[in-house]
Every structure is written in C-alpha cells, then in structure tokens.
Image 1: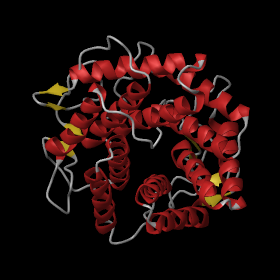
Image 2: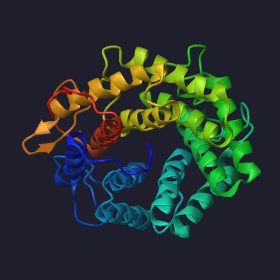
Image 3: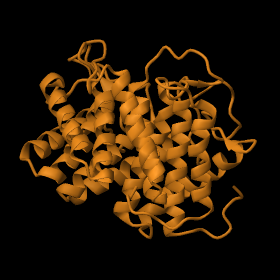
Image 4: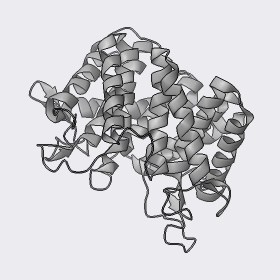
Length: 360
C-alpha cells in the first residue's frame, strides 16, 4: 500500500474499528502488550514475528490518518519487541528477523530517524552472514539450525528488504542478493501457472512441500516481484506478480474469500501477507488496469464479508474464516490479517470508492 494519506471515509472508520479492537480484545499490560489469544490463555510463547506485523499495521493507520498516536504505538511496539528479545535484534529464524527488518525500514521512513534503518541493515547483514548458502542454489535458509532447508517464507521477505535497502543506498550487493534470491524462488518453488510452493528439503531429502498451499507464499512472491520492479524495472517481474496473484485467487479463494488456513496460530497471519502485497501490486498496475479487476473484486468481496461477520458488539473480531463469525479462542495473528485487509480496503476506497458497497 502507498504511504500517502488518503481522505477518510466509511472504510477508514472500519479499519479504525479493527485497529482499536486489537487492543480491546488482546491488550495486556507490559511487558506482554498483547495476549496471544482472546479470551486470554497461554501467553508463554513470545511471538516475535507477530509483533513485527503489529508495527506494520500501526504504520498503516498512521499513514491513513496522519494521527501521530498511531506512530507512537508503532514505536512502542518496536520497543516492546526489542525488550522482550533481551535487547537484541536477532533470533534463530531468518524469516522472523526479516519481517522485523521490513517493519523497521518503514518505521525509519515514517519517523525520519536513522536508527531503525540502521537496524534493518544490521538484520540484512546478519541474515547474509548466517543464513545465505549455496545448498540447492544461492538463497536464504529458514533458520540457523537447518541451513539445508530453504523456503519462500525466508526468501520472499529477504527479496523485499533487499530491494528497499537498495532504494536507500544503491549498494549493488543488495540488488544482487535480492535478485538471486528471487530467481531461486522462481526456479525452485514456482510452477508454470505461477503458484508458489512453501519450501524444499525440510527433511534433507530434496522434496518440495507441495501439500502446504498457503496464501502467505503467494503474497510474498507478488511482493518480491513488485519490490524488485520498483528498483530495477522489468516487465517480466510485473507479469509474474500478476500471474501468481491471479492463480492464488483461483486456487485458494475460488468463491471470493480465503477460508481457514491451518490452526490459526502463525497461519492466522497468512492472509494478511497476501492482502498487503496485493496492495503493492494494485499500486503498480493502477486500479483501472484490466489485470487489476479480479484483484479488486476479491478485496471488496472478502472485506464486505469480514465487516459483516466480524461485528462483535461495538467492536470487530475476526475469525479464521470470514464467511462466519469468529469461533473462540481467536489468536491475535488472525486479527492482524483482518486489520491488513481492512486497511487495504480503506486505501482502495479512498482512491476509487464503489457506490453501493455492502453495509459495514
């Protein structure tokens, strides 16, 4: 999504409602910040990468409204994540760290401060030092304990971060690594129709995990192609992004909405990744482009459903399947996906409102 501030409207109010509902249902005293579920249950797991996405959604609200309170919440979440991680940027999972770096790069642009950008660069360097290897082709491993296991969840955000850092610094190594990682995904995990598989060699047998058909991977590949195109324009990149997005909707949302993916923990966030990066593709195409029509229809149909089924008194609580009301307990990862989808809908309607959209 663009970081320009659009005019307010009914969908902006719905996005605000979803943002405030994140705190209403999941808010917890420091250092927890957010309970992992509603109703609150086991908070023993520190969900580092979920908090990285909390930074991102607070920045979405800040760019939509211009209200500095949202920016302050983004910075508070950054401090919380860092503090709970023992003051360190790093953990054992390269995808986790890359999500945090992407949020930090946006935080740097929003605040004008150099510190978050320096931290994003430090994460990139750490990932290259500890996670980049030539097993099955030059690319990023999933985690430090499995250098032989490669997947889209690690390489997708690495490409996006590499492109963004290249936009800041124009260092050839950012673009070279990002392009190599993108080409590895394309060669290893993308089918002729553009569908993106999750990973390869998880058990050391060279096998691709074809049963794991997640929206997360489709969104990441779309986002990676668009991010590379922004710094090294190439029509093939845009074509690939459109092919994957179109196939993803046909395969994973045949009736216009994505159903439940997995158990609602980490998987609850997967849809949000798809929406975020569909937004970047729509920005690249322009909303009047013929290729944009099915993407816009998907966003509108699915968020119409979410706005209806997610109503929970005076708040909005998303379930893992937006065709029905939430079934408790709900993970806050699931709520984050809803926030990302509604922020995208608000951005779309600020640019090109649809007359007679469903009640919300």
